[in-house]
Length: 334
Image (cartoon, rainbow, N blue to C red):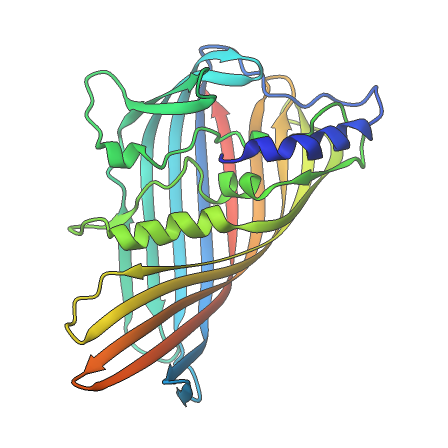
């Protein structure tokens, strides 16, 4: 949620263009309300290209090997909204009920595939999220009688209602307003970076830093459109359609184990085109559900500087993956 103050001029300008008498879409759940939130995503990606250079000359390969990746992510939390003020929660007790990621790597025509499973140490933990009025930010701490590593708390985020998708004032059907990259981050990384790692392994500090940097570097444009009110299961739901076009690129020098490596720079690049629809429960004042599709390109880059006696060489490699993921979000009152 960094740099949200930069949104103020955009939101003010958008609000000036809205006519009165429209629908008010606001965050206003009852204090003490318990909300069970589930974020499920599935993705299918393929290796599109490998490019390798040695000392500035391309060395192949001419064709990239066939690699397919099917990924899943499941995040289920229960929030108890303990207190609210000024249109935001001021205290939440969040229990991370279920946290898992998985991936299957395969090659078309091959008889074997590799299955990978990842978990988070936050699963089954309860975190207290409290608004700090002086710092104007949220603080995260372990609930009473629990112990949680400070590093796990360091990269969490409060907003799992996606409040940054809401309009700045009353809106009528067809009204539009801008969305920031911060709004997309709250959707793509619900609850923040939950630090999924493979069983039996420790968190790779360099990989975590790259993930955090790539998310923070996302920039581009987003737009929301108010599509009116729907009646479903006795609820009045405000429908908001949205799109994003975003990109980011980061690099970081990482630790190399081989003695011959003078330096190793790892890079990440991504472009994303997203579209979806959010439904907001007007009576109870919270997110009801969401569906979205994300068409993405990811580039994993490495630049290795090598010393062999009096010889020095630089090797660059870029692996480009493309694919599509779908995200489904549901919220239920308990």
